[in-house]
Amino acid sequence: MPKQTKRSNSVPGRKGVIILLLVTMCGVGALAAYVRFDDRAKRVAERLRPPVVTDLDVKAAPPHRKSNTAAQPSQSNLQVPGVVDNEVKLTRAAGEVPSGVKPEVFLVNETLQSLKIEKARAIGVDIKDHVALMDFTKDIDKGYGTIEEGNLIKALQMALGQFPEIEKFQIIVDGKPIDSLGNIDLSKPVDVIKPGQTSTTTSEGSSQLEAN
Image (cartoon, rainbow, N blue to C red; front, side):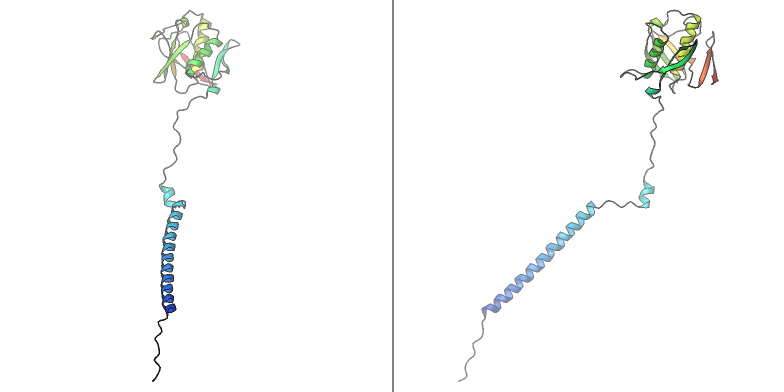
């Protein structure tokens, strides 16, 4: 009788198939994880990448606007008027304006000191339509000689003329304008003297401006 051949139910063969399947599944999972990780990496890189500026972006950008700040004299450039050789001139730098004090008030008080006008002080200023209403203590109205009064008015003209927004001024005491300090008519606002100009104030209070 012929020998019957036993079918090979080899266990190692089945294990090989299972191992192959496991390896394949691991490979697919690793590939999926790589793709997912790579996609996230790309998105992170795109977020960190600086934006690309095109010509259209440059044209669409709003133009740079310069500051529209009104021109003001630098505090270090303010000059105090005084009398030199019987003539009113800008004699020295005013120095630093104290905190909380308006530059106009500070400069006028420095001017009064320069002219050796004692006790009188400016205590406030209100600028309306380019006219500075300078509020003084009552001591400003003490009575002056013709020359002393003329020097005072001209010094105030030169002091306040350093502020671009001021074109005229008027002396105020107790909320009311002063008509005169002795000889000069001050019932109307007096023209200031801008830097680079000279003025002759007449007994009627008019001002004649001439270029230096």
